[in-house]
Length: 423
Ligand SMILES: *Cc1c(COP(=O)(O)O)cnc(C)c1O
Image (cartoon, rainbow, N blue to C red; front, side, top):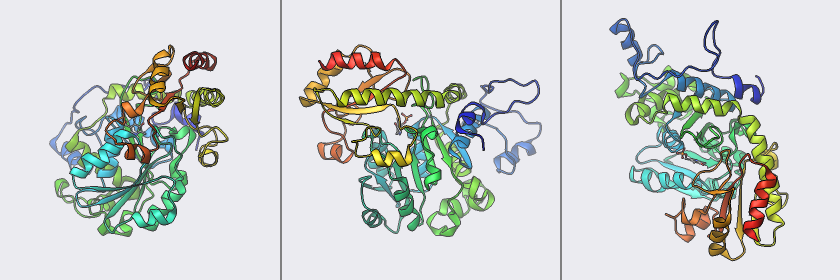
């Protein structure tokens, strides 16, 4: 297996003799066939091929194959957004009447998707601190639990998940672990190597890396055995009436069942496909991901050290700081660096935080994180404003928290900007 740097640049597409060096953008809704039989085979999932871009597109599949190789997975698909990726990953196995165990330190949009929208669809969630004990984890499972969910590095709480602890608990109870690996990216952590079964991404963040295209991805390790307890996962182990009685786990095996079902059922019915144009832009981002992640981490480390020494800063969270609560977990799971996001509190609380943000010149106020340009956000008044103080605390967010996404500018210039604003 080539190293991650080589996979970033070359995986997913190998041009033949005289073919384009860059992946082609197949900007076509539909695909032409010579006979109805040819097309019928595609509809029956008897042959692989393309018929309509609402379900699948060749450009998307080349880029998904690259991310699949980077994560060490067996199969992958792109989605229109990170939200769609997490929804599909969970809904592919947990439907009305089912239950999911999730870390409470997750992205605000994902929390809302789980706690509000999927709850309306009949899926119940139990949220647990990422720092919980194995016994507390065990106690959260129910007979109808279908999956466990967490984020490698939580956005914006910046907690580091003990992936092995969550994977062991999931497997003790016969269900897969789904890990949202958006902030770490496979350059810094490959959750499948630590026991995760399914990995999701908001490719909108570091993978695209330039704030250009919203997108998502799901990677299946192909390791989870749906047939070990077939009654738990009827969607994969019993005939799909909407696909001529296909049993996904039988027909496509461990490596293909999860992604084929998510494509054939969920993408067909919800149509949350990434546009091929966005997939092309995502691929450009992936080519330099390993170079950019290194620089994001170096800059963030320098900024975090500056903030930690500033008299107007009350606390800093960055798992690369030796005093950080998650330093030792980061040393284990993220030995080459974590991400470019640092959070901190300003003396004087919520008001002072807002005042500092107004004074910043290079660092813009944006909802976004994880791209080339540095930006910051006050989650309590923006992304997490749906939450009450108790829920905020459970998600690891205090009212004075500023989330700073350190970009690829000169660290010296960023520190100077922060220094003048804090002064
Ligand atoms: C942004 C984000 C999402 C949602 O992704 P979108 O592409 O904005 O839909 C999910 N998980 C994490 C960790 C994120 O940072």
